[in-house]
Figure 1 (cartoon, protein in one colour):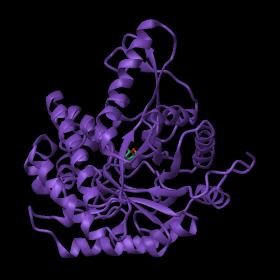
Figure 2: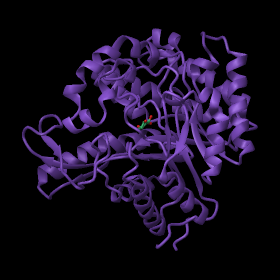
Figure 3: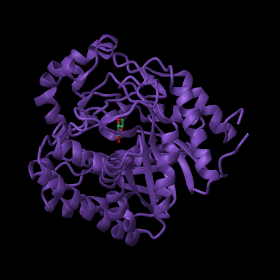
Figure 4: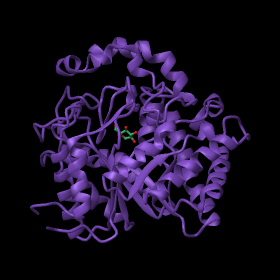
Length: 424
Ligand code: BGC
């Protein structure tokens, strides 16, 4: 059996708004205003097989985060399960709105809550990886124009400094921002998630402000504790040209630049490690009438698809890891997973992706941990897909909030216990 390096971190990832329940941020308002419209558009957005398999996509409740998984109250139970699954690390995000519900007014209750949560992780031997911003903003930040407004950089700075000081005894690994690229493109350029803006200019401003934040926060963090490890999180598409036609190769390079290299260039000096988040590949094929700008399509590379229709392509993780390694920073895989309500593919998905992670390690890539997305089913808020896509190692019954580990939970547990994959 090929072993992973000693000290490898194993865990799963979640985000506050997706699991906690009863959050009060700019997304909650947006959900209320848009749920009915999105439910009405489900028949255009999803394929027939998806509509038949998940009829809840036509209901308004599917798009309202509401009590979500109630992890706000049930975190101890969830962390017990993570521990029972052999995990030694866990990634989660703090809700800025709970910590600073009004501008300049920090909530003792909110701060105390996350102290309890982080202590609960430590007590179970789970190394916390803490994200400060997983896309949601307090309502007062939303009202100011969120990341379209330069002032937000200053406010975030103050929030981050407070959090670093509050929890410096509990946390070493911080990820100030989750996938800034994704929120910038979906929230500010295409407008299909909050703040729902459709403007290239706004997207550019938001990207610049987020870049500034990462730079500032890196300095702030190191001033609080030089031992802090600061990460940059990036949703990394495996972008490849499907053929050797020169225009296809060129188009692929341009896409790769905007999707990946631009990010690394901007963020390389403001982090100690990269958090790579891999879900999908994009094998560019030039075709008039294709989905991308009407010119390109994503060539089929696998028959296996997740419930969201994403191709399952484990080799892609090798491709993105070896590309990201060129930046010379250690890498943690801070998200990788699939929507699979029946748990048909998840075990194989984990094993096959991890084999490619081992291959990258064998080729010299410095990879130090893996966080599956996600520990529990949750409110899949990307593009406001809602509750029907099921990403959890643990199933949630949204009526009773009962947690039930899936078969893949135990497969992952065995890998962790062996620190390797059987049969390898
Ligand atoms: C996000 C998660 C999300 C996952 C699956 C990532 O881009 O960080 O919040 O649930 O993708 O779509």
